[in-house]
Image 1 (spheres, one colour):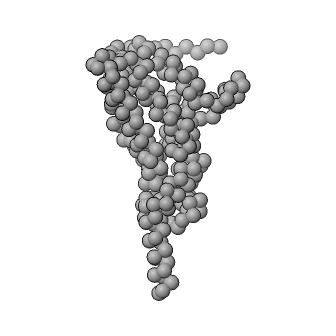
Image 2: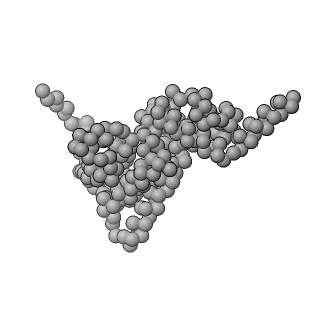
Image 3: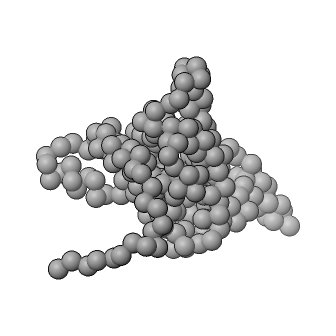
Length: 236
């Protein structure tokens, strides 16, 4: 009986440690980035974090909730910074319309700052985010939609004022493509290969400088009208 009480005490001390919670999150972030949600087991997580299963259950309840906590830890501060940047440039504009470029840069800069900051996950987290976007699990898609909802709604209103020729529905599609292009570019390795081919160093700022004109052009493009009338023509 004494051994049992000692074991329970050890679990309680382990489970209530803030350092333990951080170790679990750090280990989970790396494993989820490397293997994806489904392929990462709780056994791998506990071994990497140096904790027991009771500690994971105490802090997070389930693997799904742990995955959400890993994303929330990084996404909440980044999206809050995006909202604050947008509010700041709106105050500075003193009621004048903002340009599409200014609104877009307010959205991009926090992602660039996160990519550069290894203490906040850096590129590893962005690669994990890229995996999360591609993951077919319904709970991940639902979670990401909810996580971005406030920020996207705020930016959508700003973009609607900057791009009055777009309907709300059309802008929704274009912002979906913007977020996808940003996540893929910062999380993937193709851009690194392009830098290597031209002998350039890996530079996130240069990368976004190349991405931004592409995104601005896509946002500003005139609506195509009824796409059901388009004819698909295959070339040789």
